Figure: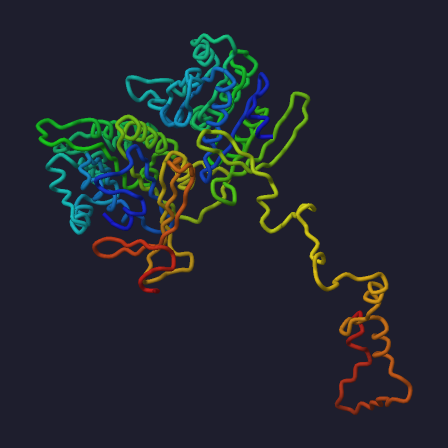
Amino acid sequence: MFTELNSILNTTPDSFTQGEFVLLSDRRSDASFLIHHFLSLYLRARCKVLFLGLVQSFNHYSAISQRLGVSLTQAKEKGQLVFLEGLNESLSVLIPRETDTGSEAMGFLRDPAVGLKSLYEFVRSGATSSGVGEQEEWGPPVLLVDDLSVLRSLGASVDAVLDFSHYCRATVCSQLQGNVVMLARCDGEEEEDDGDDEGSERLLRGLTHQCSLTLHVQGLPTGYCRDIHGQVEVCWRRRRGDGRCTHKKLFQYKVHDKGASFFAPGTSSAVL
Amino acid sequence: MLTELLQGTEAGGFLIIQDSASYSGRHLLKSFINAALNREEAVHVLGFEVSEEELTEGLIGSPVQRLHFHNAYSDPLGWTDQPGFTVHQFCLEELTRLVKQTSHPKPATLVIDSLSWILRHVGAPAVCKTLQQLRKGGAVRAIMGLLHVDMHQRGTVGNVCHLATSVITVAPGTKGDEAVAKITKRSKSGKVVQDEEFFSIKTDLTVVIQSMSSQLGHKQADPEESETDPTANLTFNLRLSNTEREAKQKLALPFVFSKEKKTALLHSSPGSGRILYEPDANDDYDQEDPDDDLDV
């Protein structure tokens, strides 16, 4: 986890707001480094983590988490981490073999029109179950999804993905008082489209309406810079104690080997 | 106008709050719910988008008993075995049954959070039909709905808002917690009134309207009473008498190009030299004056 981001979001492994729906988004950039932050944060906080890793293999996440000081393999063995390896599961749906686990989580690939109900069932059973023979009590459940946009490219409609995120929020955030972190990606420029029915922009807007905290990652508007990799706009949407409804802050960041540093615009160590 | 709308809609009224991803209209919707509860009306909420806890956060006191929350949030599509109110139950019969369940002498106000959720699953024609039937039906006195305009096509938004008697579009304001509301109100006689107001919502859900002039930073509108006369209370005289004022106005400033100066410069006085020019073969002598089109 990134300590500077923790102080920006006012979270620590020991105290964090429960019932939050965090939306990570990026436009022509890569916000997946934030997923690693939240993954290591919630594992350190001893929460039960349900990770839908749809874009990369388990080894990829494991290698990066190792650098952040968290072992995914250990967490998985202890039952703290439930990992859905989307790449493997999709393959087993499309090319069934005898050795398959039979998990229907990616079953929507057979018929995308059906919607993501089976994926939701997987999330619900993962979040509510406490495995047989588990010695340790874990904290509130946390769902991480990397990433939602890939569901669209696999054939699910924007409405189906929004329904899925709604149900995840209803179950994990409201019912179980856990947190949900989802990544959604945009490819093009921000268009003022007149209600483009199937589009990553519409998905992003729909998710923004549902969430309580957004972190939007973009490249620097002035272009490429070796020392500053981009900017993050943090937007708190829920009314907080001091009465402010929407509170926005902009930071610049740099990703390095063992983490990422965040700073106010113009205060990069390369500049000062 | 926002205050008038908060004080109550007439029977058969349909209020729509339009919002977008940049500013949520739910806070304003909660203010309207709070105002209706304080008027001792029964309020039925069809909650699709947020849970009961989140919606009732901030609503305090005994009026909350008159608020009936119908849970369409935990399972609106019937995916689990304990569905609450599903989106497919959005029709006249079901809604009338729902509202009549609670016995209250006055017809209730129905709040829909949000219309966008229903429009994503049920087509716009069916939604409009149900809303119109509800308005004419008499089971509910007034309807309030939240609509996310950036989630639908313009035509759909237009169709639904056409049924409304008042439409409030909220957007973030220039500073801090303030937002701007563009209000369109259609009265029964057909008259349409539009207004734009800046407002902010306090923690007790009351709406505070900011005056327009405080928002226009570049225009300083000084009222007359605050203007002080700078030439008063001085030990020297800065005022002008009438003769002095006339002399001042008559004075020709040195760099102002007036008519007298122009004629003096352009017409040379007699006796000064004249310029004779004889072009030879290499010159390209153009008789036309290139400065002819200047208005000097």
